[in-house]
Amino acid sequence: MPSTADSEPLRVPKLAALRTAIQGTARATADATALAWSAGRHLVLAQAAVALLGAVLPVAAAWLSKDTLDLIAAPGRHSGLLAVGSALAGAGLLIGLLPHAERYAREESQRRTGLLAQDRLFAAIEDLVGLSRFEDPAFIDRLRLANQAGGVGPGAVVTGVVGIGRGVLMSAGFVISLAAISPWVAVAVMLSAVPALIAELALARRRAATMWRIAPSVRRELFFQHLLTSVQAAKELRLFAAGRHLRDRMAVERRSANLAQRDMDRRELAGQTGLALVTAVTAGAALLWALAAAGQGRLTVGDVSLLIGSVAGIQGALSGLVTEVSTAHQQLLVFGHFRAVLAGGPDLPVAAKPSPTPALRRGIELRGVWFRYSDAHPWALRDVNLSIPYGSSVALIGRNGAGKSTLVKLLCRLYDPQRGAVLWDGVDVRDLDPAELRERIGAVFQDFMCYDLTALENIALGDLGRATDRERIHAAARRAAIHDTVAALPRGYDTPLSRLFPADDDDDESGGAGGGSGMPLSGGQWQRLALARAYLRGERDVLILDEPSSGIDAEAEHEIHLRLRELRAGRTSVLVSHRLGAVRDADLLVVLENGQIVERGTHAELIEADGRYARMFETQARAYAVGAESPVRQEVG
Image 1 (cartoon, rainbow, N blue to C red):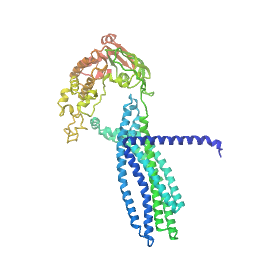
Image 2: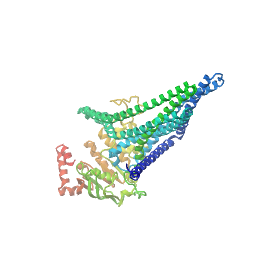
Image 3: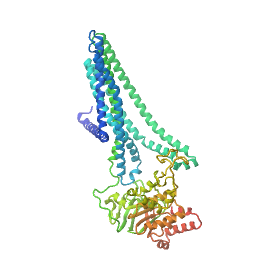
Image 4: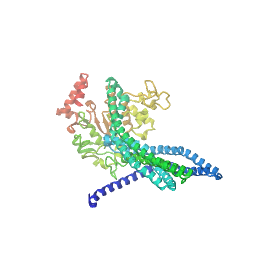
């Protein structure tokens, strides 16, 4: 056998782990309760009051039942029967009403807590400075569980805590009552519940672990569901007859999740069946003993009634207590995802006392910048040195994957470089407030958003401070050549640009052709709305145009670029475009390849150098001359 000294090192870590687990559970319980308290303290107090009455009244009813039976059985002692019976009826009435009051307080508390939790969760998401977390599958899984737990978890934890308190009080009341008749029976009934408590806690941990283990399968299943119901994917899926394939993929993910859940359910069934047998045997043995004692005259009819009620009450209370502990424990484990998101901290460091972000006067500089999206990815930018002088226009050119969009993301500080720095008038952007920095930047991205909102809201999102200034919004739409299109919609600027969410007062929400007032636009029209958003932001210090006219016809493209030249005049701008004719007038053309700058200069200088840019331009010009654009796409990206 190991000595005490040998076993001590093993015992200490276990005790330390247990202490850490208890402390963590206590903190999580306090956080959940504080959230529910902030959402509606009167509802939490109401739940506690109802739980207290729910614990006391059944015990009182059991004693009143005993007294009633004893008065009936004892000759000449019927004088107090009416009073005791009335008290018993009143207790029964309250016991019947309490669940309804408890249900209302619980559900209203969960609604309010869910709303508050959702707001805090998405406020924490909004505080994320960059994009890296949104590209992490584990974070997306945690975010989904956090959203689910935030809506239900805190309320369920409070309900569990209240239920545990009720179970403890009720159990104590019935144990005391049972001990007055037979202490040994009371001890036996209590001990029969201990295995149930231990087993349920273990099952709760398994349930929470199963939820986390199947999270990737659930995420993929939701992805396939979205594809199969998305209007954007509907055309290709029907044309390529790919729906069945994706449906089978979705079924595979569902079966994988079902398999894990089925295993969990079987474990739970086996454990609970065994525990139910223990409980039933204990209760049966107590009943047989009580009947034998009553037959020997050692117990009255009322005593037997109290014993039966107490055994049933203890087992019911302990069963409820075990369930509440198990449910609360499981909800606390899932609630941990909510707490983890809120406590996750910034994804990019933000200076405690950021330097003010002044209006740009000298320019932006990338100095020795290296960047990759993770250690498993290749370098997207390699030792990039680039100066963008104030008031100049710089065009980024290169094939797909050359690093153009990555460079733009660094300028907006959506990521930080692993090496080197991005300087704003000589100040590292990491020392600036990201919100102030972005307030000085206007942008149109190639992967612009199409919001299922009204036309006015789609434009107003570019500068919410001007959301009520319809004249400014109309002016921005005119500059983007989309005003006439929007004005001709059924509700003008107030027309919802979606078949999914038509106007609130529309009777027909079918979303089919001609149904509802939602009016989805073409790709080119959506791109003009994105341009209008950029125009609404007005005269920002830096204007970023990432393929601003890729979805627009040639005639409209010419008009758009004329207007963009006006907007860029005298302003620092960064242009990204596959169409070299749209950027040839930039002050500086920068050619990227494999994350490195391989050429830079004006259009004339690069043509004279007869390098990569010259070959790309010649290929594109030749393609336009024969009326075909595909070779250009192959050459330029």
